[in-house]
Image (cartoon, rainbow, N blue to C red; front, side, top):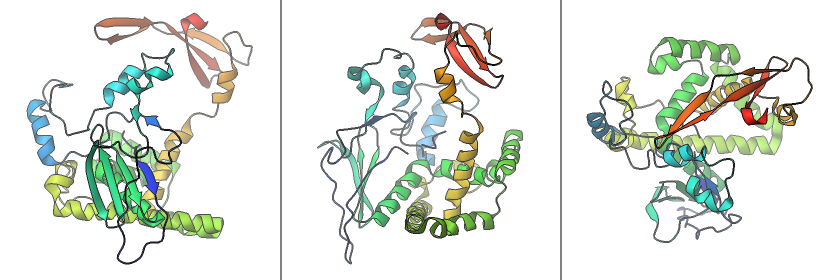
Length: 338
C-alpha cells in the first residue's frame, strides 16, 4: 500500500506580510547535509483520474491477462518498481557506488533544468516536481504554509488511499468500498484494537496542548494546516474531476469525491498504522543476538520447503530454515548459516 509520501521539505521560516510573498525554491542540495537517496515503489504518483485510467483498461481489461507490462500508465506511476524489485538481488554485497541503481536522488531541491512542474497551491507555497520521478519539493515562507503544502501534495499523490486509511482507522472501510468478507473482517479487527468514537478522537487531539504544552500546541497547529492543504486539493478536484479526482470515486458511486478532511482523520489513520505495526516485533534485538548454535529456551530448527524465484529467465533456488524462539518469534536463516 502506498501509505508512505516521499516529499522533501525546505521551509523558510520567515514572517510573511500581506499579501503573502512567494516562496522561492532553494538551489539544489542547499542545507540538506550532503544528499539523500530513497525509493518508493511502485512510484510517486498514486492518483489515476478517469482519462488516465481509460487507456490502461483498454490495454489491460480486468478480465484479461494479468500483469500487462506494456499497458500505458499515468506518469510516474511505477517508475520506481524495477529499482526496488532488483534491490533484493543486490544484497549482500551492495556497495556505495551501486546505490544510484537502486535508490533515487532525494536531495533537497532539483537540479537546474530538471524541474517538470513549478506551481503554487497558495501564494506563499511553491512546489517543484522533478521530471525523473515527479517527487514534490515543498517551499514555504512559514511553518504553517509548509504544513499546508505538505497536505496539498499528499492529497495530490495519494487522495484515495488516504481516504481508505481514514475509514479503515474508524472501522468503517466497508461503508466506503463495500462490505466484502475481507473488508468486514478488517473493520471488526480495527474495532477490537481501537474502538474510538468521534468524541474519543476529538479528545485525543484537544488534549495535545494540555499534556505537552508548547510542543502539543505546535502539533495541533501543524495538523490544522496540513488538513487545510488536503481540503484545498479536494476543492480543486471537485471543480476539475477529470484531471484531479481519482477514478476510484466514480467506481464506488461517489463522483463528487471524498468528504472534507478533519484533524480526527489523522488520529484515526494513526490508530490503524499503530495497530498494524504494534502487533508484531519487539524481539528484534534478541533475534539479532542469536546465532544458529545458541542455546535458548524452546529453540528448534525446522526445515522448510525449498523456494525458488525467477529473474530474467534464471531460476534461483534457496533452501531456508526457521529458528523458532520460545515458540513465538522466528528468524529466517539461509541454510548455509546453519
